[in-house]
Image (cartoon, rainbow, N blue to C red; front, side):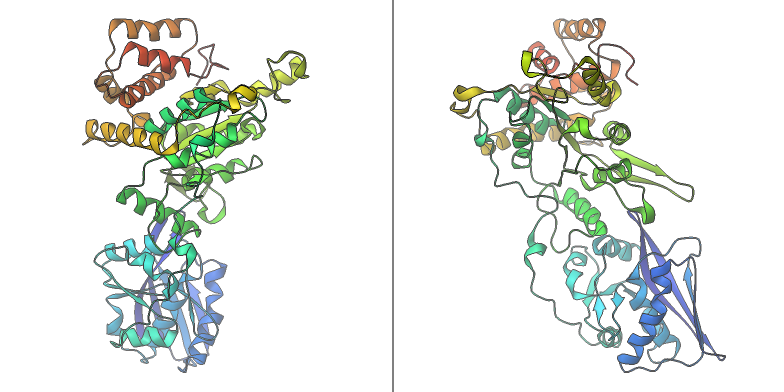
Length: 510
């Protein structure tokens, strides 16, 4: 007898609908799974057979053939176990096959028949609605994620017998009480950190507020101990909250990655990978479609501390996501495009010892300085909108009053973003950092003096064509922070003063 069951598999961020077709015919006992299944799916045979027996059902002593369609899509992970078990029970007439039509199943089976949760529940719940299934049967631990999706009945089950009961009309199992990690947002919460802790670095704080207001990339440069990392880790405290579409998008990504479940993401992601992270670790593309840090930082912040210590190949891999807001990963067997619209906040020392420009304190040779500069290529720096140079504030700076607090800065950032959202309604973007050329020219018209400032900077080799556009975007953000409809000449001047200079004195930036 033949039975069909709906389930899903994950490939990167892509969710594939899988039809589990189970056929049972007379013959020598065997359990065969076909359809491009990986090792974890092939091993499901032992889990499913044992779970069926330990749940009080009969395992057919016949030839069992399972086809996972479509056959050209890799089936990955243990989330197909529950669907396989229900398919076997339906094909052996222990469950009426017609009851399976409106249900989809997701879960790993333990040998005693209990159901374990799997990553990617929110994304699978969305795909469940698109596939026409009215009910998603899954483990209770991640049921709240699935409940975020409208027009879908979620049936949490603790055991295989409970799943069979749901098919026969019994009520699902109760939800467990939410745990602490289910109440947390995505990424690292930095809300307890405040900009009022920063003293004597007003220039850097201003640059960070501008970056947050427009979603711009920012580089903090200076000697050790001047507060680069301290300032950067306070940027989550001034960013606006996620909108609901953004929250669903972020929750979906982190759910698939396996590091978030429960409620919607409450805070913007803040990712801070170590400088030994490889290019694959940053942009993704490893085995089984694992996403990289730039994707996990989508709609949030990617913080690269000690930027010059990252491998050159890792830094150069950031060019496309910084420019396009996405990552295109192409491998021999597949190609995938991941969203990667994030703010890059980076911190670096000006030289290997960190004291370049401070006379006798710097002990680096010209060779050391040249090697250090080559790590940060012109094309990469050309994609960074703002640079703030930090100096040793001294005892007077440390005792000075803070320039602003996180609450005041966040209010200014939210007001600036609201102006951008109002001006860009109907457009594909909502922040100045990702304005295309046509929209940028439409909303950032300069007077003659401002235009001449840009042309003069380009003529001196300080700005590439890309750099001119990025400077104009920053000037537009500065105008928004100051409540101006038009970009003033002084806004262009401030934006130019914050442009990275290292590596940009030629037009070779690609």
